Amino acid sequence: MLSTRKVDAGLGFQTILYRMGKLSMIATANNSSIAVDSVCGKPSGTQSIERAASILREIASYNDQGLRLSDLSLLLKLERPTIHRILSCLVREGLVMQDPVTRHYLLGHGLFELGLTAATQFKLQTLCRPSMTRLAEATGEMAFVTIRSGRDAISIERIEGARPVDAPFIEIGVHRPLGVGAGSLALMMLLPDDDITRLCDLNAKRLIRYGGLSTPKLLKIIRQSQDIGYAVHDSSLIPGFCGVGMVINDHKGAPLCALSVTLVSESISTEKHQEIISLLRQESRTIQNLIYQSGGLAH
Image (cartoon, rainbow, N blue to C red; front, side, top):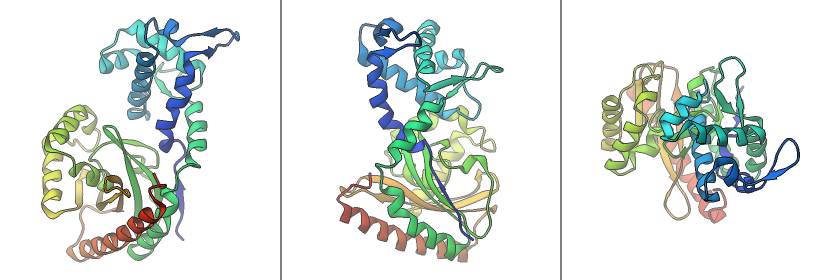
């Protein structure tokens, strides 16, 4: 039996900025109102919001283990007192929480709640789900829809094939370095070469967690995919998994998401490869037509 896993908070990051804009006047625990600018010690409310957004993005990228204050200071090149003041605001608002044992900062329950609310505004999953179901049934493998989030990729919908697979690296809502995974690879391979190199360098330390993946190895896989016109990888990208992916454009022709099939295997046979790419092309066209008909409301 096929099962569907829906994203909880992965989709709603942009909408979080609305909540963060409201942080210019925060109701603190003692019900007094203070400006974010005062809390963060900066003259510009916009700058404070941008820094808070950057903190949330970095924490999201490492949310399986969280980040220390010193980690955030190093990654964002900001002074620790500045980071600490912003984190204090975010913790009070429930957007960030701190592990009492490790003292690492993680995304908070407030983001989960905002993500659930934001998800109702998006039609992308609804449009893609029938095609994904057909892919999973026809191949017996997992089907994914993936979107880009800055230097990361997030799978927002997953339908399992003949057997459920438990793999943290490919769970819904998990931030992965752009390029890791078939859908993620499909989104990255279309970028300009300079952007690809820059993103690989930005994510270099995180790539190691994926079976010792390195920037040169990822760049090689990207080039191979570019040569054939769609994303394909074996287990050298994610240990134990291989996949094929294609990009789906929005109604204006810009990349919107990627549709992919992932197999629990070291590699894909030629026959299976051809079967999957044929099905992906067919279902990609179907979704593309639905997006055009919706006038871009899927985004």
